[in-house]
Image (cartoon, rainbow, N blue to C red; front, side, top):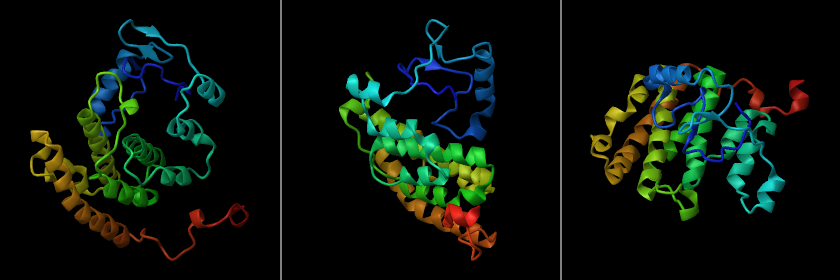
Length: 236
C-alpha cells in the first residue's frame, strides 16, 4: 500500500492496517474504527508521537551494504514483479520457518480478499490447512526485542487459523468459518501443544471438506483447460 520498508513495525501503523491474528469478518468493526482514527494521515504513522513517517523504498543494495539483507524480505519486496500472482503465492508454501509460514498465511488472505472468489483460492486454502498445525522454527534474529518464541509461535498459529476461517467465509463453509470452536478449548487455555494436536486431527477433516465442497461445485481441478496451466502464447 505504502511501498515502504517498516523500520519500527512494533510502533508504526496506518489507516489500512489489517489484523493478522483474527479473521477480517470478526474484527471488521474494529478495523473501521482504527481506519477512522488515522484517517487524517496520508502515510505510515509513528503511534507514540503521532507523527507521519517518511517512506523508505526497499533497496537490495542498501540491504547488502548495511548488513540487513534478508532473503524473505527480498522476495516479498519484489513480489509485485512475479506474474501470474498465484505463482508467488505458491512459492511461499511449505517448510517450518516461522516467518515464512506467517508470510504465507498473510499473502493467501490478501489474495482471497482481492480475487473475491473461493474458486481461485481453494488450492491455497488446502495448503494453509496442511500448515496450520506445523511447529514453526525461529532463530533469535527472527524475534523483535522483548518477544518470546512462545509468543511468536502463537502469532503463526493464529495467522494460519485466521486464513482457514477467511476461506470459510469466502466459500460459505460454516465449519471453517468457526474453526476456532473445534480445538477442544486449547485456544482458551493457551495450550500450544494441545492446540497443535487438535489442529492436526481437524486438518484432515477440513481438507476433505474443502475438496468435497469444491468438487460438488465443479471447481476441483475441472477437466476444461485452466488458464493457469497455459503459457502466455496460448492465452494471448
